[in-house]
Length: 257
Image 1 (cartoon, rainbow, N blue to C red):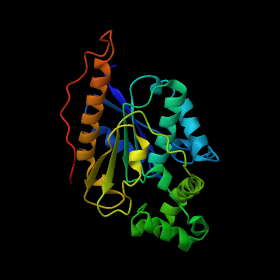
Image 2 (image 1 turned 60 degrees about the vertical axis):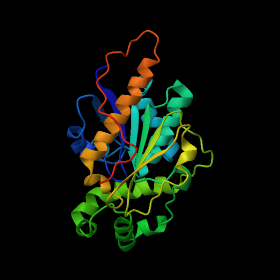
Image 3 (image 1 turned 90 degrees about the horizontal axis):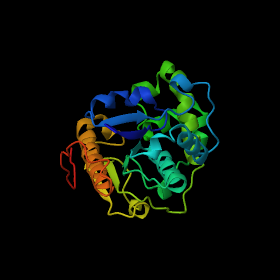
């Protein structure tokens, strides 16, 4: 394998178009694979599954061959929850957890809450939700064309999230790296329950969508962590089949922006 996949799970309302710009942020050792949810872009007419678990099962089935080899998972906001559920399926059904799990702008699965479902049914309430959760700038939240194109996906994503509840605290058998915005309300509380390894938390200037301003730093962090984890896994393979791995840039305990 020349490149290791990082499977990217977008935030609510987003898809490949939003995250395609990240393709150029990673170096040639990373193969960024962006999950495409229903109700957007090429899948506009595909209905959303009834639950986060059902959506995770669909993604797992679609990318099963990717998940048989070494890979990492990265999810932002809602994408972190879906990525976590997919990672659990990889552990349970393939005995192959990701080499690394990255979460950005997301609370631990047990703390995920969206309780404003009723607000999605009125224009004023929906605009308030968009502004509160950072899904759109103020001018877009009042733009009829933006709302016509993106509102259906955002609403269904948030309804899906409203029905999610995790009480099992099932840990992943891989390191977990949490990335947070210093001005966001999201914290790393309870994330340690979701990994058998020491938790790493990295903070960046900005709010919920701090990733837009820190693309290069975040990509560099994920590259170095994945390459090191891949190297360590390869070193444990007796036949030396992964000995020709790319060099590791080096890692740090904290990234600041």
